[in-house]
Image 1 (cartoon, rainbow, N blue to C red):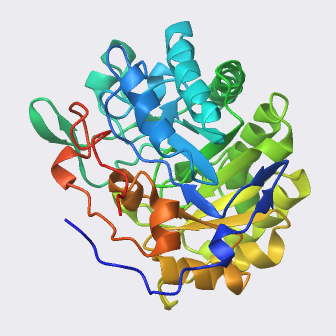
Image 2: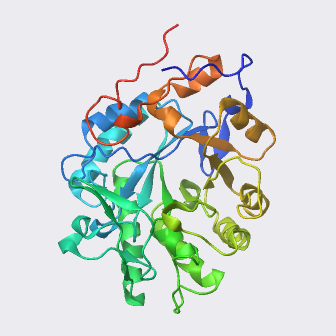
Image 3: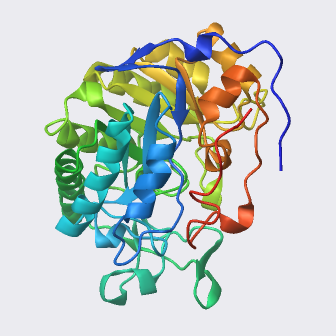
Amino acid sequence: MNAGNPKSSAPAKLFTPVRIGELELSNRIVMAPMTRSRALPRNIPNPLAAVYYSQRATAGLIVSEGTQVSEQGVGYPFTPGMITDEQVAGWKVITDAVHAKNGLIFAQLWHVGRVSIPELQPNGGLPVGPSAIAPEGQAYTANGAVDYGIPRALETSEIAGIVTDFQNAARRAKAAGFDGIELHGANGYLIDQFLRDGANHRTDQYGGSIENRVRFLLELVAAVTKVYRPGRVGVRLSLTSNVSGLKDSDPIALATYIAKKLSSLGIAYIHNNEFPQPASADIPLLAPVYRKHFNGALILCSGYTAETAEAAVVSKHADAVAFATLYISNPDLPHRLATGAPLVLPDRATYYGGTEVGYTDYPVFQQ
């Protein structure tokens, strides 16, 4: 199904090169990370994924689907890891395929925290979080949907081990040939849970004040920048999203503090997952906060069209714009946006799991 044409005048600024950290991107269109649940067997990315990513290598930058840093970090079936040698070998096939088409690809490193269930955890244990507060929503299993339960609050002594897991995953990502890494601090997962006071009720050095709640993220950045230079590290954030019931009492103050700290560390970019909607009293827009207080590149994501993405970069509201679902069904998305070719709508029934159907069988545009 076609989604229609962009305006007849093709966006121009979207197709200019941009410097993000150490890397020169050929255009300002980013492929956003998207879970596709096709890592079989044993959460190993397979050769079909190499076809999928290489088909989309004309993006200025690809950010991989979330890849868990430990068995404890798993929250969904058939999602890839960065834990074993077999997984690294699977990812190496993918990065080689993307590089063969002159593409750039970052690995998104991921720990889901409380958004998991015992059957996906080592030895059937409880998922972990900053505090013993259950997320809203349900997990989907082979036996149907089940409610999330109350996670186990991490002991202070355990947090250093998770930081090490991220650092080790960064080392494996480097061995797998990734051009850089993105820390998944968005969408209600573990880093996000520490950041926001709706999920973080800790009374130790990782809870309470904004400074304490951001400590975990900053420790992760310090750890992974011992593997990749800061100019090859990004952080994804979504501090106004209420996914899994996550909230914060003062997202503007939180975003301001994070932006200043990440700027001082010299990382490549902040990837802000925020709809380009008018601000409201309940949901403020945070992109201007990052733009004001962060000296690196700003990538915006969620709900953008060719026209709104072009406007964002022309106005310097963003340096680049990430597209998600449109990349599922339009492997040649930059070409389509540049030429005004019809955009194909993706089939939601094939988003997760399955074979090449709805994954690698979407065609490029033929005049």
